[in-house]
Image (cartoon, rainbow, N blue to C red; front, side, top):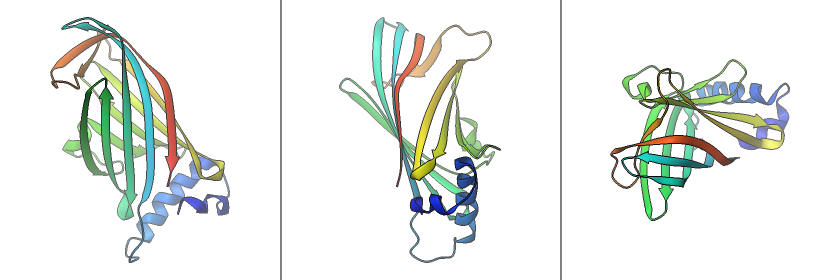
Length: 177
């Protein structure tokens, strides 16, 4: 379905709304493939506790599948040096179930696909914008919650919490299949 964008008039964001609506209508169609979006980004951060690791680089990969009925599945992986981890979620776009309390996906009014991740001390917002020609763009923004001056994330090596004085995204990519 990724090739159908040229046939839809209006903004690229309108295409995502069309895609979600079309998937809901086409749900009974046998043999129909899910829409797949691959997202990657690299981040650089300075760990300050429990030990000091300035300039730590982490590579993030997410693959999302949007299936009929607005069912979205996400597989994600992180890697840094010799360490890596993997996780997955499944939800309905815009749902407010228990799984969506930490990570949730929704379609914004402008037609973008938005992922919100609520960490203990910060919020990560990932925005997927559909562009002409079946392409897309990924923007990732991490914002500290009020009252906090450090980011707190699970360490890839041990899944214990570590604290970071800085966090920035250095590269992103997005591909629709």
